[in-house]
Image (cartoon, rainbow, N blue to C red):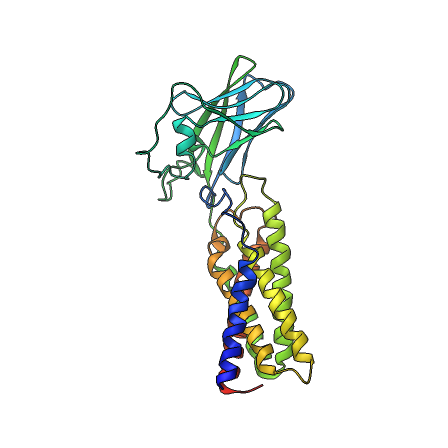
Length: 332
């Protein structure tokens, strides 16, 4: 029994280790500014933008995206100070001496400004050479974690304006922020139904339970990969679904391979499956807010993630409990 517990611990440790090996150097910048239940839409641009210049909102209301080719573009900050600029040779600069640049690091501007000193002379820093500027703009979203109350049946929250200057011409980009309805709580039933099937498999055909665990892990890898690529650089969130599902895939594959070898200790295979199940449970817990949020970052159709996360939780929980129980009891 002692050896079984040791193998179980190693399996769960490998689960965390396989995930840590996929961790990015830092959280994606979209994590701190990502939308959940609100969406910002550009409704007008006056006067019209010249050819080669385009604007849009990316990630619900997370980022303002401005693209310019061979034009001089300047974006003023909240205090009308120079904040962002794109030169005629498509170089993008941000003014690090701008208060706006400092405040935009957090969705609600909750930053300590005591150590920051704005400068009258811009401190331009090159951030891109492709003519694409993206930044989180507090003017286009609701500045409170408390859900806003819409002012009409369309879900309108507020009307916003962001000024820019293109080749010396002042242009006003206007838009509307909408509150979108949360997804139904019934999405969690997909996990409950698959959990019931997983329990039945654990009692009758356990190998099929692990095949199901592998299939869901692979589905998580695919959905997580598409979700990560679905947002541009700067808007991307930490790929939790991709990371934890990859760990689950590796561990379940190893467990199934060992399970086919008659001379291999079955406790080791069970421990690997327990580690995989644990990885999927943690994944579902960390991504649970995407099940009911009005906006799921980076993937269309959103129902894929809404259904998958409850399934990962249900099957991962059954696999973990089943394997831990069998290892502790000393059953193969």
